[in-house]
Amino acid sequence: MQRDADRLARLLTAEQGKPLAEARGEIAYATSFLEWAAEEGKRLNGDLVPSSSPDKRILVLRQPVGIAAIITPWNFPAAMVTRKLGPALACGCTTVIKPSEETPLSALAIGELACEAGIPPGVVNIVTGDPGAIGDALFNDDRVRKLSFTGSTEVGRMLMSKASKNLLRLSLELGGHAPFIVFDDADLNLAVPAAVACKFRNAGQTCVCANRFYVQAGIADEFTARFAEAIGTLTVGNGADEGVDVGPLINDAAVEKVESHVDDAQTRGGRVIVGGHRVAVDGLADRLYAPTLVSGMTPEMLLCREETFGPVAPVAMFHDEREVIELANASEYGLAAYFFTRDASRLMRVAEALEYGIIGANDGAPSTVQAPFGGLKHSGFGREGGSYAMHEYTEIKYVSWRL
Ligand code: NAP
Image (cartoon, rainbow, N blue to C red):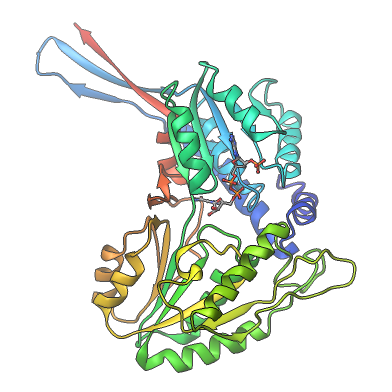
C-alpha cells in the first residue's frame, strides 16, 4: 500500500469523491492499521495465573476468534477495511469482507495487494453485490464467528439481530452526532481551523464530524464571524483537481437530505449565514453543496438531531458549562465530541461528563492508529485501533493444569 499510495489515493477519489489530499491522507491512515497490527501481533501474550489449589496452575491463552465477517461503509473505503483487516490477520483470523456497493474498488485493490504480498488464498476474501443476500449468507453460515461492522445505526441494529442466530462476537462502529463546544476562554486560533477541518473534511460525510456547534455567549459573535470567513474561503469542486477542499456528496439522496435539513432549519427560525445552496461545476453531476453555516440552531431542528452527513455547520449559543453538557449529551449517539477551553480544571470536568467514546479536547482531529476508536450508546460498541483492537479478534481460553 505504501508503494502504491498514489494510485490507491486516485482510485479512492475517483470512486468516493473526496479531495485528493484527503484521499492520500486516508491511504496513509489505512496503511498504518496494517503496520501497527502486524507489530502488535508479536504481543498477543497470555497469562499464568496462580490457582487457589497449590497443585494447580491456570494458563490463559488468547486464540483467534475464527472467520470474521467485515462489512464496511462508503465514506472511508480503504481505512474502514484495514482498521478491521489488520488486527483480524494479526490475530490469526481469516476474513470475508463486504465493502459498500457505492465504493467497492478500494477494497478490491487492497485485496489484489494482499495476493501480491503473498497472503495465502482464502485468508482475505472480498464479496461485492447485493448486501442483503451477502449478509444472509454470512449470518446463516455457522463457520463465521465474528461480525465487525461499520455503518449506520439503523443497519447495525438490524445486523445485530441477525447475528444473534449464531451468537457472533460483535463490533459495531455506528453513526454519530458530534457536539463541538467553544467556551469563552477558548483559543480561537485553534478552535476556528479545527472547526473547519472537523466539519468539512470529506464534505461532512464522516461519523466523527462535528454536527452541532455550541458557542458560549461571550465569544459567540467573534467565533461565528471568523468561522463564516474561513468557510467562505473553501473551494468546492472535483476532488481530483488540486486545491479543491470540498468534493461532491456520495449520491443524489445525500444532497437531497442536506437540502431538507437546511430547509427545515430555516422554517424553524435558523438563518443561513454562508452557503445554503448547490454548486454547479461543468462536467460534474449535480452533487456539490456549498459549505454552509446556519445560526440559531434549536434542539427541534433535524440538523440538531439526525446525521446530516453533509457540509452544514449549525451554531447555537449557550451560557454555562452545565447547560452545554446537557445539550451535548441530549443525543442517542455517543461517538465523538469536541470542546475548546484554556481552563485545565474545566477540561477534565467536561471530558469526564461528555457521554462520548472519543473526546477532542482542544483537538478537532483525534483519530489515530494507536487510540481506541469507538462509541457509546447508539454509536455502538467495540474498539478499533492500537492494542485495544486485538481484543476484538481473540477469544480467551484457560487451561486448568493439575501438576
Ligand atoms: P450503511 O448504509 O449502514 O451501510 C454500511 C454497510 O452495510 C455497507 O456495506 C452496506 O452495503 C451494508 N449493508 C446494508 N444493508 C445490509 C444487509 N442487510 N446485510 C449486510 N450488509 C448490509 O452505512 P453507509 O451509508 O455506508 O455509511 C454511513 C454511515 O456509517 C454513517 O451513519 C456513519 O456515521 C457511519 N460510520 C461510522 C463509523 C464509525 O467508525 N463509527 C465510520 C464511518 C462511518 P451497501 O452499501 O452495498 O448497501
